Length: 177
Ligand SMILES: *[C@@H]1O[C@H](CO)[C@@H](O)[C@H](O)[C@H]1NC(C)=O
Image (cartoon, rainbow, N blue to C red; front, side, top):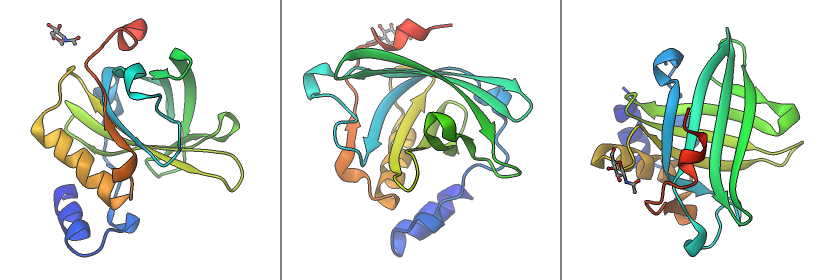
């Protein structure tokens, strides 16, 4: 279904309305440790210079009903940074938020539980940045997962800000459960 939506959206005219988050996502199955293999952002400086890039990671945990605990490790300009967030589900929608911490939206746009394309909206008040993360259970990507990520980058107009991260797991492994 999502594949069809993407094909239609790319085939006609890239538009965000063509994307649907995975409504029936099994969050228990989506929990646990993920590598972050690629990042795309419309925020200048979200990623450090090429020589400082490393694989990222995330640990997802169902905290309580309707709440997710998300740990993210990313190599930024100042080195390896870990962030911990509690996100709350927004009503019936599959969007999680923590607006006090500047997270306006966290949603999974595509997954088969071996990979995930995660849409992260950050910001305060009327300012919002878009960031797309490619999650993978393994430290290497499959062709399918990279294609999904690239297709969604195109739909969200993030292709220019996209980068595949170098295979250095030293930052990612700082949050191994
Ligand atoms: C990727 O994972 C495999 C085992 O799953 C390991 O042997 C390899 O060293 C890892 N590569 C990196 C760059 O961490």
